[in-house]
Amino acid sequence: MAGHKAFDLSGRVAVVTGGNGGIGRGIALGLAEAGASVAILARNEEKNRAVLGELEKLGVKAVAIRLDVTRRSELAPAMEEVERRLGPVDILVNNAGIAIMKGALEVDAASWDRVLETNLNSVFLLSQIAGRSMVKRRSGGKIINIASEYSRFGSPMVPAYSASKGGVVQLTKSMAIELAPHNIQVNAILPGWIWSEMTAPVKEMPLYNEIIQRTPAGRFGEPEELAGAAIFLASKASDFVTGSTVYVDGGYAIR
Image (cartoon, rainbow, N blue to C red; front, side):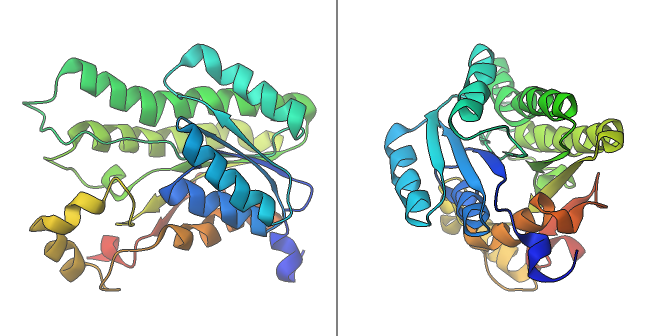
């Protein structure tokens, strides 16, 4: 399939965790603009309602479901609700994530567990739920995991985050191998420094100037700039792409 039709997501159902702000919102709106019905799963009901309104203005079917991805018992019911309201899930974007700024000698076990549960365990569990459904339906599908530059680089500031995002990349590769025979592609997007609530405090740190100097584009990215990569990986245009890591970082990783 050639041309813009390869990127058309009409008739597809997408789930975006953490889809009520930052990168998740940017991706959710991008998928909707490409024609997908979109479900956002996130904790803050007020933000959920706001983004739901934006999605509905684009003329697509959309739902917002309150979900804390660390509550394992609530994951399957949330996905089942999406299927009841929108139809079977074709695209899963595992975006929900947190960072706790404590070094390896300072971070407590509870904080470590919370980061790993949010950033890695939920990715596995939701991918397992979606993957099993896709395999059973023999429908094919797309799983897109939001990793990080810190999947590649170490960080003395956020070792739990770095470890979790490194795990996301390895999980992506492993699931890609297992699910490829079922026409399910599993890929990861590695954002660079993107403006969000999580990264906003960095502007007041000496680290900010280091980032700008290292990034060839000379700036932070905007959440909406992740949408193009997500649409590609969610569409038929990427049917022969699996187990890949796609950098969206203004060139940060090449230096």
